[in-house]
Image 1 (spheres, protein in one colour):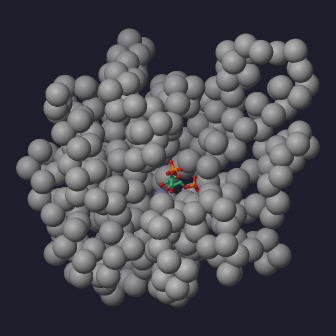
Image 2 (image 1 turned 60 degrees about the horizontal axis):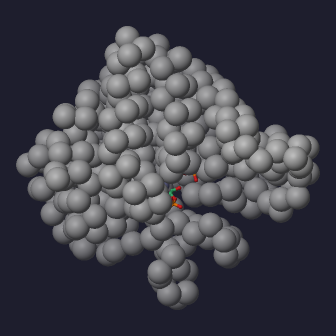
Length: 339
Ligand code: G3H
Ligand code: 13P
Ligand code: ZN
Protein backbone atom coordinates (compact mmCIF):
# COMPACT_ATOMS: atom_id res chain seq x y z
CA UNK A 1 0.00 0.00 0.00
CA UNK A 2 1.34 3.44 -0.95
CA UNK A 3 1.99 6.02 1.71
CA UNK A 4 2.98 9.67 1.61
CA UNK A 5 6.03 10.73 3.64
CA UNK A 6 3.98 13.26 5.61
CA UNK A 7 1.98 10.41 7.13
CA UNK A 8 5.22 9.01 8.53
CA UNK A 9 6.11 12.37 10.09
CA UNK A 10 8.90 13.06 7.60
CA UNK A 11 9.73 16.30 5.83
CA UNK A 12 11.61 17.10 2.62
CA UNK A 13 15.10 18.58 2.65
CA UNK A 14 13.90 21.98 1.43
CA UNK A 15 13.71 23.85 4.74
CA UNK A 16 16.82 22.26 6.20
CA UNK A 17 18.87 23.15 3.14
CA UNK A 18 17.54 26.69 3.19
CA UNK A 19 18.68 27.15 6.78
CA UNK A 20 21.99 25.37 6.18
CA UNK A 21 22.76 27.63 3.22
CA UNK A 22 21.80 30.73 5.14
CA UNK A 23 23.80 29.86 8.26
CA UNK A 24 26.62 28.06 6.45
CA UNK A 25 26.51 24.58 7.93
CA UNK A 26 25.85 21.14 6.45
CA UNK A 27 23.02 18.67 6.93
CA UNK A 28 24.32 15.19 7.76
CA UNK A 29 23.07 12.35 5.57
CA UNK A 30 23.88 9.05 7.25
CA UNK A 31 23.42 5.74 5.41
CA UNK A 32 22.07 2.83 7.39
CA UNK A 33 21.19 -0.80 6.72
CA UNK A 34 20.39 -2.18 10.17
CA UNK A 35 18.60 -1.38 13.40
CA UNK A 36 21.67 -0.45 15.48
CA UNK A 37 22.85 2.10 12.91
CA UNK A 38 19.40 3.68 12.73
CA UNK A 39 19.15 3.75 16.54
CA UNK A 40 22.55 5.41 16.77
CA UNK A 41 21.76 7.99 14.09
CA UNK A 42 18.53 9.09 15.74
CA UNK A 43 20.04 9.04 19.24
CA UNK A 44 23.09 11.04 18.11
CA UNK A 45 20.84 13.56 16.38
CA UNK A 46 18.44 13.81 19.34
CA UNK A 47 21.36 14.46 21.70
CA UNK A 48 22.81 17.14 19.43
CA UNK A 49 19.45 18.54 18.35
CA UNK A 50 20.45 18.10 14.72
CA UNK A 51 18.35 17.73 11.58
CA UNK A 52 19.18 14.58 9.69
CA UNK A 53 18.72 12.84 6.37
CA UNK A 54 18.22 9.11 6.86
CA UNK A 55 19.65 7.57 3.77
CA UNK A 56 19.31 4.10 2.21
CA UNK A 57 20.70 2.62 -0.97
CA UNK A 58 18.66 0.16 -3.04
CA UNK A 59 20.75 -2.70 -1.65
CA UNK A 60 20.10 -1.48 1.89
CA UNK A 61 16.35 -1.39 1.17
CA UNK A 62 16.53 -4.99 -0.05
CA UNK A 63 18.65 -6.03 2.92
CA UNK A 64 16.27 -4.49 5.48
CA UNK A 65 13.03 -5.33 3.60
CA UNK A 66 10.85 -2.40 2.42
CA UNK A 67 7.95 -3.29 4.73
CA UNK A 68 10.18 -3.40 7.77
CA UNK A 69 11.99 -0.21 6.68
CA UNK A 70 8.73 1.74 6.69
CA UNK A 71 7.95 0.57 10.23
CA UNK A 72 11.50 1.34 11.38
CA UNK A 73 11.19 4.90 10.11
CA UNK A 74 7.76 5.26 11.67
CA UNK A 75 9.24 4.05 14.98
CA UNK A 76 12.25 6.35 14.71
CA UNK A 77 9.98 9.39 14.28
CA UNK A 78 7.89 8.31 17.28
CA UNK A 79 11.01 8.01 19.43
CA UNK A 80 12.12 11.50 18.42
CA UNK A 81 8.69 12.94 19.23
CA UNK A 82 8.67 11.15 22.59
CA UNK A 83 11.90 12.95 23.39
CA UNK A 84 9.98 16.21 22.92
CA UNK A 85 12.48 17.31 20.37
CA UNK A 86 11.64 18.99 17.08
CA UNK A 87 14.22 18.06 14.51
CA UNK A 88 13.37 17.69 10.83
CA UNK A 89 13.90 14.19 9.46
CA UNK A 90 14.01 13.28 5.77
CA UNK A 91 14.10 9.79 4.29
CA UNK A 92 16.25 9.70 1.18
CA UNK A 93 16.99 7.13 -1.52
CA UNK A 94 20.75 7.16 -2.13
CA UNK A 95 22.00 6.58 -5.70
CA UNK A 96 18.71 5.61 -7.31
CA UNK A 97 19.57 4.53 -10.85
CA UNK A 98 16.17 3.98 -12.51
CA UNK A 99 12.88 5.85 -12.72
CA UNK A 100 11.06 2.75 -11.43
CA UNK A 101 13.19 2.56 -8.27
CA UNK A 102 12.70 6.27 -7.53
CA UNK A 103 8.95 5.99 -8.14
CA UNK A 104 8.67 3.02 -5.86
CA UNK A 105 10.45 4.92 -3.05
CA UNK A 106 8.31 8.01 -3.59
CA UNK A 107 5.17 5.82 -3.41
CA UNK A 108 6.48 4.19 -0.24
CA UNK A 109 7.04 7.16 2.03
CA UNK A 110 10.41 8.62 0.97
CA UNK A 111 10.53 12.41 1.12
CA UNK A 112 13.61 12.70 -1.08
CA UNK A 113 15.23 10.63 -3.82
CA UNK A 114 18.50 10.76 -5.65
CA UNK A 115 18.50 9.92 -9.33
CA UNK A 116 22.10 9.25 -10.20
CA UNK A 117 22.28 9.44 -13.97
CA UNK A 118 25.95 10.34 -13.94
CA UNK A 119 26.87 7.05 -15.61
CA UNK A 120 24.90 8.19 -18.66
CA UNK A 121 25.75 10.76 -21.30
CA UNK A 122 24.93 14.36 -20.31
CA UNK A 123 21.78 14.37 -22.46
CA UNK A 124 20.55 11.02 -21.17
CA UNK A 125 21.26 12.09 -17.59
CA UNK A 126 19.08 15.16 -18.17
CA UNK A 127 16.32 13.04 -19.73
CA UNK A 128 16.21 10.52 -16.86
CA UNK A 129 16.57 13.13 -14.11
CA UNK A 130 13.80 15.27 -15.61
CA UNK A 131 11.45 12.28 -15.70
CA UNK A 132 12.07 11.53 -12.01
CA UNK A 133 11.70 15.20 -11.02
CA UNK A 134 8.35 15.44 -12.81
CA UNK A 135 6.94 12.49 -10.89
CA UNK A 136 8.57 13.45 -7.56
CA UNK A 137 7.35 17.04 -7.67
CA UNK A 138 3.81 15.88 -8.39
CA UNK A 139 3.99 14.20 -4.96
CA UNK A 140 5.90 17.07 -3.30
CA UNK A 141 9.03 14.94 -3.01
CA UNK A 142 12.44 16.49 -3.68
CA UNK A 143 15.18 15.16 -5.98
CA UNK A 144 18.98 15.13 -5.87
CA UNK A 145 20.76 14.76 -9.22
CA UNK A 146 24.42 14.14 -9.98
CA UNK A 147 26.87 15.62 -12.47
CA UNK A 148 30.39 14.30 -12.75
CA UNK A 149 31.43 10.83 -11.61
CA UNK A 150 32.74 9.73 -8.25
CA UNK A 151 35.40 7.17 -8.87
CA UNK A 152 35.44 3.80 -7.24
CA UNK A 153 38.74 3.37 -8.99
CA UNK A 154 41.57 5.79 -8.37
CA UNK A 155 45.01 6.00 -9.87
CA UNK A 156 44.41 2.84 -11.86
CA UNK A 157 43.90 0.85 -8.68
CA UNK A 158 40.81 -1.27 -9.00
CA UNK A 159 39.52 -1.16 -5.43
CA UNK A 160 37.10 -3.77 -4.24
CA UNK A 161 34.46 -1.29 -3.08
CA UNK A 162 32.95 -0.15 -6.32
CA UNK A 163 30.58 2.69 -6.61
CA UNK A 164 27.13 1.36 -7.51
CA UNK A 165 27.17 2.78 -10.97
CA UNK A 166 30.61 1.42 -11.82
CA UNK A 167 29.88 -2.13 -10.84
CA UNK A 168 28.18 -3.16 -14.07
CA UNK A 169 30.20 -1.08 -16.47
CA UNK A 170 32.71 -2.75 -18.79
CA UNK A 171 36.46 -2.14 -18.20
CA UNK A 172 36.81 0.20 -21.20
CA UNK A 173 34.07 2.51 -19.97
CA UNK A 174 35.58 2.61 -16.45
CA UNK A 175 38.66 4.33 -17.86
CA UNK A 176 36.43 6.86 -19.56
CA UNK A 177 34.71 7.56 -16.27
CA UNK A 178 38.10 8.16 -14.62
CA UNK A 179 38.89 10.75 -17.25
CA UNK A 180 35.53 12.48 -16.82
CA UNK A 181 35.95 12.47 -13.07
CA UNK A 182 35.26 16.06 -11.97
CA UNK A 183 32.03 18.00 -12.41
CA UNK A 184 32.34 20.59 -15.15
CA UNK A 185 31.18 23.92 -13.63
CA UNK A 186 30.05 25.30 -16.97
CA UNK A 187 27.41 22.55 -17.21
CA UNK A 188 25.69 22.88 -13.83
CA UNK A 189 23.37 25.79 -14.55
CA UNK A 190 22.04 24.21 -17.71
CA UNK A 191 21.55 20.88 -15.91
CA UNK A 192 19.57 22.49 -13.09
CA UNK A 193 17.37 24.55 -15.37
CA UNK A 194 16.65 21.62 -17.70
CA UNK A 195 15.94 19.06 -14.97
CA UNK A 196 14.55 21.26 -12.14
CA UNK A 197 16.37 19.13 -9.53
CA UNK A 198 16.31 20.41 -5.94
CA UNK A 199 19.95 19.63 -5.12
CA UNK A 200 23.05 18.52 -6.97
CA UNK A 201 25.78 16.02 -6.08
CA UNK A 202 29.13 17.02 -7.52
CA UNK A 203 32.48 15.31 -8.02
CA UNK A 204 35.43 17.30 -6.64
CA UNK A 205 37.79 14.48 -5.74
CA UNK A 206 35.99 12.34 -3.17
CA UNK A 207 35.08 8.71 -3.78
CA UNK A 208 33.10 6.07 -1.96
CA UNK A 209 34.55 3.52 0.42
CA UNK A 210 37.75 3.39 2.47
CA UNK A 211 40.33 3.98 -0.30
CA UNK A 212 39.75 7.55 -1.36
CA UNK A 213 43.27 8.62 -2.28
CA UNK A 214 46.63 7.17 -3.08
CA UNK A 215 48.28 7.20 0.33
CA UNK A 216 51.86 7.78 -0.82
CA UNK A 217 50.87 11.29 -1.89
CA UNK A 218 50.89 14.14 0.61
CA UNK A 219 47.52 14.95 2.16
CA UNK A 220 45.41 15.17 -1.01
CA UNK A 221 43.23 18.15 -1.55
CA UNK A 222 39.72 18.28 -2.88
CA UNK A 223 39.21 20.51 -5.92
CA UNK A 224 37.95 23.58 -4.09
CA UNK A 225 38.57 25.60 -7.24
CA UNK A 226 35.86 23.57 -8.98
CA UNK A 227 33.51 23.92 -6.00
CA UNK A 228 34.01 27.69 -6.00
CA UNK A 229 33.26 27.90 -9.72
CA UNK A 230 30.11 25.83 -9.22
CA UNK A 231 28.99 28.02 -6.32
CA UNK A 232 29.55 31.09 -8.45
CA UNK A 233 27.10 29.64 -10.97
CA UNK A 234 24.65 28.51 -8.28
CA UNK A 235 25.16 30.67 -5.19
CA UNK A 236 21.99 29.64 -3.32
CA UNK A 237 21.57 26.13 -4.59
CA UNK A 238 22.08 23.03 -2.38
CA UNK A 239 25.28 21.23 -3.37
CA UNK A 240 25.98 17.72 -2.05
CA UNK A 241 29.25 15.99 -1.20
CA UNK A 242 29.30 12.20 -1.50
CA UNK A 243 32.14 9.98 -0.36
CA UNK A 244 32.83 12.16 2.66
CA UNK A 245 33.84 9.63 5.31
CA UNK A 246 37.01 10.45 7.24
CA UNK A 247 38.18 6.80 7.53
CA UNK A 248 39.82 7.34 10.93
CA UNK A 249 43.07 5.40 11.30
CA UNK A 250 41.98 4.59 14.87
CA UNK A 251 39.33 2.18 13.56
CA UNK A 252 41.39 0.88 10.63
CA UNK A 253 44.19 0.02 13.08
CA UNK A 254 41.79 -1.84 15.39
CA UNK A 255 40.48 -3.83 12.41
CA UNK A 256 44.01 -4.74 11.32
CA UNK A 257 45.14 -5.48 14.88
CA UNK A 258 42.27 -7.94 15.34
CA UNK A 259 42.65 -9.99 12.18
CA UNK A 260 41.35 -7.64 9.49
CA UNK A 261 43.16 -6.57 6.35
CA UNK A 262 42.51 -2.99 5.29
CA UNK A 263 45.70 -1.52 3.83
CA UNK A 264 46.40 1.96 2.47
CA UNK A 265 43.00 3.35 3.36
CA UNK A 266 42.45 7.10 3.22
CA UNK A 267 39.51 9.39 3.95
CA UNK A 268 38.59 13.05 3.77
CA UNK A 269 40.17 14.99 6.63
CA UNK A 270 37.96 16.96 9.00
CA UNK A 271 39.58 20.19 7.85
CA UNK A 272 38.83 19.45 4.21
CA UNK A 273 35.21 18.82 5.15
CA UNK A 274 35.05 22.08 7.11
CA UNK A 275 36.53 23.90 4.15
CA UNK A 276 33.99 22.28 1.81
CA UNK A 277 31.15 23.47 4.05
CA UNK A 278 32.65 26.94 4.23
CA UNK A 279 32.66 26.92 0.44
CA UNK A 280 28.96 26.09 0.29
CA UNK A 281 28.48 22.31 0.53
CA UNK A 282 25.22 21.85 2.44
CA UNK A 283 24.67 18.05 2.51
CA UNK A 284 27.36 15.56 3.46
CA UNK A 285 27.03 11.80 2.91
CA UNK A 286 28.52 9.36 5.41
CA UNK A 287 28.36 5.60 5.13
CA UNK A 288 31.82 3.99 5.32
CA UNK A 289 32.71 5.59 8.69
CA UNK A 290 29.73 3.86 10.31
CA UNK A 291 30.54 0.50 8.69
CA UNK A 292 34.20 0.73 9.62
CA UNK A 293 33.44 1.58 13.24
CA UNK A 294 31.05 -1.33 13.66
CA UNK A 295 33.55 -3.76 12.16
CA UNK A 296 36.35 -2.52 14.43
CA UNK A 297 34.22 -2.88 17.59
CA UNK A 298 32.94 -6.33 16.61
CA UNK A 299 36.42 -7.66 15.77
CA UNK A 300 37.93 -6.31 18.99
CA UNK A 301 35.08 -7.42 21.26
CA UNK A 302 34.84 -10.94 19.91
CA UNK A 303 38.62 -11.48 19.86
CA UNK A 304 39.00 -10.26 23.44
CA UNK A 305 35.91 -12.16 24.63
CA UNK A 306 35.96 -15.49 22.80
CA UNK A 307 33.17 -16.86 24.96
CA UNK A 308 30.76 -14.05 24.02
CA UNK A 309 27.80 -15.11 21.90
CA UNK A 310 25.15 -12.51 22.68
CA UNK A 311 24.89 -10.10 19.70
CA UNK A 312 23.39 -7.47 22.01
CA UNK A 313 26.75 -7.21 23.76
CA UNK A 314 28.90 -6.48 20.73
CA UNK A 315 26.22 -4.70 18.67
CA UNK A 316 25.33 -2.65 21.76
CA UNK A 317 28.97 -1.53 21.99
CA UNK A 318 28.90 -0.67 18.27
CA UNK A 319 25.82 1.44 18.83
CA UNK A 320 27.48 3.34 21.68
CA UNK A 321 30.52 4.09 19.54
CA UNK A 322 28.36 5.17 16.58
CA UNK A 323 26.43 7.59 18.79
CA UNK A 324 29.74 9.19 19.86
CA UNK A 325 30.90 9.56 16.24
CA UNK A 326 27.60 11.01 15.05
CA UNK A 327 27.51 13.53 17.91
CA UNK A 328 31.10 14.53 17.18
CA UNK A 329 30.47 14.99 13.46
CA UNK A 330 27.27 16.99 14.00
CA UNK A 331 28.91 19.26 16.56
CA UNK A 332 32.48 19.60 15.38
CA UNK A 333 32.42 19.09 11.62
CA UNK A 334 28.99 19.70 10.09
CA UNK A 335 27.80 22.41 12.50
CA UNK A 336 24.28 20.99 12.36
CA UNK A 337 23.93 20.65 16.15
CA UNK A 338 21.58 23.03 17.93
CA UNK A 339 18.90 23.29 15.25
O1 G3H B 1 27.13 5.14 -2.40
C1 G3H B 1 27.30 4.09 -1.84
C2 G3H B 1 26.76 3.87 -0.48
O2 G3H B 1 27.82 3.81 0.42
C3 G3H B 1 25.85 2.66 -0.42
O3 G3H B 1 26.53 1.47 -0.65
O4 G3H B 1 25.11 -0.01 -2.13
O5 G3H B 1 26.78 -0.98 -0.52
O6 G3H B 1 24.66 0.06 0.31
P1 G3H B 1 25.72 0.06 -0.78
P1 13P C 1 31.48 7.17 2.10
O1 13P C 1 31.78 5.85 1.46
O2 13P C 1 32.67 8.07 2.07
O3 13P C 1 30.92 7.05 3.48
O4 13P C 1 30.37 7.90 1.20
C1 13P C 1 29.03 7.53 1.33
C2 13P C 1 28.17 8.11 0.27
O5 13P C 1 28.54 9.00 -0.44
C3 13P C 1 26.85 7.53 0.12
O6 13P C 1 26.15 8.05 -0.95
ZN1 ZN D 1 27.28 8.43 -2.71
